[in-house]
Length: 220
Image (cartoon, rainbow, N blue to C red; front, side, top):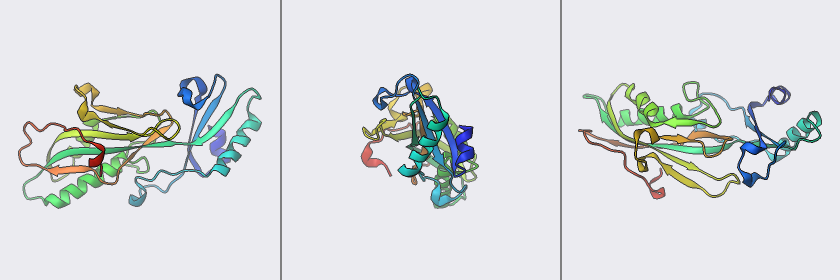
C-alpha cells in the first residue's frame, strides 16, 4: 500500500484485500490480491461532497503492472477503483422558537452532507468496511443551533453487488431493534457517500414519532 502511494502521488488511499476474504463472484483464489485505490480530491468543497472519484482503466493497468513486477510470481494482483454506496437520512426536526424553519432545514441538510462525506475534514473518515449508526447521526444533528429535537431518524442505503449490478435498498426503519439501527458496507472495498438531498420534515410535537420505511420512489 505504501509503495503504491509513493509511486502514484495522485492516489489518496490504497487498501489490499486477500482473495479468500472477498465475494466468490470476483473469481479470486488464495494467493490473489485485490488492490483498491481512491484518487485524491480537493478537500472541503461542497460541490464535491458526494463525488465518486475513479481512475481510468489505462492508469489502473499501469498500477497493476508496476505492482506485478515487484510481487511474487505466484500472486495474481488486480487493481480496481473503490466502490461507492449512497446513504440518505430521513427524520423529523423540531425547530427552536424564533428560528427560521427554512434556514434550519437547509443547515441540517448541509450538515448531513458534510458529516457523511469522506472528502470533508469535519466528516467521517474515508474508511472501507464501514459502519454507520443512526444514533451517531442523530447526535450530530442535535448539536446544531436552531434544532430543538430530532425524531424518527432512519438511514437508507443504496448499494450494488460485487460486479456493479444487483442494486439493493436498505432501510433501518424496517428493522426491529435499536441495535439493528445501523448500516454496514455491502462490499468490503466500498466507501459511503451522502446523497445531495435528505428527507427532512418539520414537526411540532415529536412525541411518539417513529422512523417510517421508505421505498425507492421516495428517494431524493
